[in-house]
Length: 308
Length: 275
Image 1 (cartoon, each protein chain N blue to C red):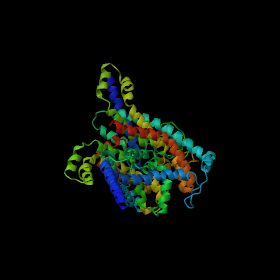
Image 2: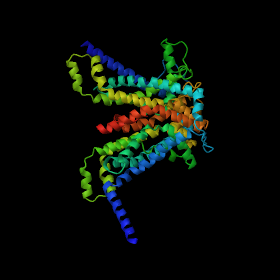
Image 3: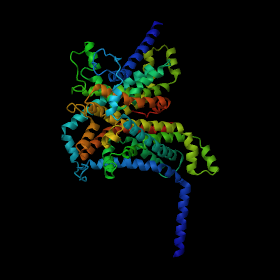
């Protein structure tokens, strides 16, 4: 009995060694730390959020399973309806704004000119400034007697000061404007990257054929810029659906929830009212809203690594 | 001829207008901060250069607003994240790019898929976990979750894939260990990519707002963005003081930007840095 046993051990050891030699498991050790961290801080929380969304979790007591109750409450929650509408309106305003404005800026600064780098840096500067600073800045600009109201009245466009952040009808659009101001430089850089990959010969050929500047842009530049445009749409849509900072620093979701958006509402429910279960259900809805865009982003990233 | 001139005029005009729009708010902020206490802040057209310049606003603000503590905290949190990432992420990129092991493709796809998980929906479980192990209100909890950015793993993998295979063969023949090969030969070759992902992580952590808002309760631990959100209440909505605090808050960003401008441009070109 003893002999086959040791033989078995030896053969197992041999096949392990063969396996190790064949696959070089050290490769696995190289990726292990990153995988562990991603598992702990990305995959586990994702799964836990789905689970919590089916419970009455409130951080103090252990979560108790309540089925789809949170989702039923959500359907009847008028604030949730407002929040969802605000998030979509915000996204629908920001995405085309980014696509068009940043393209115009990129075309403007995509030329060989002394000092053009300074202009690019100036337009890019707001991207790097943290949101609380941007918030203080724009609260001052938007205030009752602030610069913008001063200008509008001086130019005779309005008679009385507008409540940019205090009027529920326009507060959300005031936030859209700040987002565009802050993010334009970022998307401009993506466009610049795309523009610089377009061979100059194509434009020159179009000039030879007698095409004017607009036709050259419409028929040569724009089609070749398609990948950049798609990228801007995807990134700005993801960013808009996840907006939090602008709202947190400028309006706290008010007045009367007119600027309350998904992530801010999740934050409110989870960390102000400790309704972690309900907030998790909101998180799942956010995840689903983002899913299509994230999938597109993922596909693009993946495609990049195939083509490179 | 005139059409070309008109076009040039249009470009110059466009540049000036965009300069005004993007730089103007900064100038107004600075101007408000430096107005003397008695000045009417909101005249139009505004008096951009205050007379007299009120530089004593900064000592006044610094007495209440612990700017240097916040900067120190932010530096520590951002630097620690960058440091840990520089150890873990290039290693993972190297493994995925140059090694063969079972399930490699599946695991890499899994890493890529985490790009789809929005940070915002992971907060509740993370908060709950850190609460259970007693790490709420600590910098550790601020750092750990963002050490591995999936997009950075992707960038590092790209960087290693493009290297020629000769180095590895030569080093293996010379009897170099697998880790030595990575650490002494391969890693130095992808330094630019490491710099790029480090800047991503630094800017990300430096400006992060939501997670510190949720996590930190002790003012002495606040990061700079979180500290800046306290300005309004600290000065009861005094515009000059808030503006002065915001001006202080911009300074570190400007310094970092000027130091690393070249790398920033490269980083943005690869589609990653976002405030």
